View 1 (cartoon, rainbow, N blue to C red):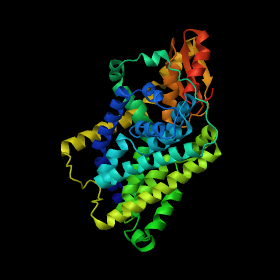
View 2: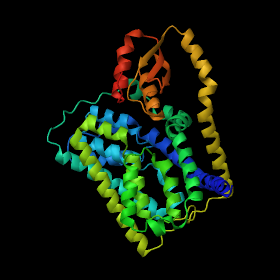
View 3: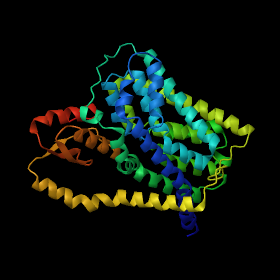
View 4: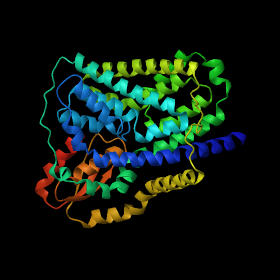
Length: 411
């Protein structure tokens, strides 16, 4: 009973701590979408060993894409002409850190840890991308980027008008479930893990880093959801470097990502990709441990210099709670209406789509379908691997398929 009470208190504490930072991160992610659309990113990647990798890394780091949500985007970049190194750098940097996960890291682990996380993400992506380009023997054929005119003509004003919808469905939606899961796991770990576990049994920092690396590489975690888990382990005595290794390897690697790298870039690229992430993660974790041994990191959840007013914390917690509630309730509220439209509209078409693994993938497919002229009301069935939409002009069916394929999926 005591453990249950402690778990609930810890879960509530973690939730309150990250709420204002997550809301701010969601807003920043939305603004990045407005002023840096996908078409801008896709124009700047191409030939060269270093410059495209740098651009892909800098473009990818602030984007709010999860570790499997980044896969179709990276595949699309590769198909549109991005070289292997730029594709790998984008696939490495994007899921490791974003505006939302950086602010959550700052709130739970302090400013020094947050800066180390950004630096490590930057170095990991650059190292993996440049190394892949240098080890690639076959030069990839560069295609001429094709841009959908409907998407290209979407103005900043139109994107600004869609900001709340984008934040709710395309930024928060893909991480909602894993975020809640991460907070719950963090709270439970804080309650059940004894204080002496890491100090007595895992006191060697290298052993703890290797263990966290082996856990993080195959595990599917998103950058935001994994941060509370890492914070709870640090508060229990785990070396900060081991937590950093987990936060770098977990979001950047999983079965889906590894398979995508193998399919798009080749098996040799997979070996280089994993070696780069593992080696840089261990190096940066060691440097953080060394730094932690010479100064005070202030790694205590919520104990940094920026004091958040109670009204802002509570208001953010309520707003975030409403957004999460809407995310989980909405499918049930509108399910009957969508089914009714599908049954009465003779122009409804269902198309199978392979390669979707998460809510962000579903959002990407919906966006791709509705980018084609005279298509609307796309409904994605993630479990059934299909999308149903209204097509006013049946001759555009092949264009829909092309748009879905350009987004990185098969149909």
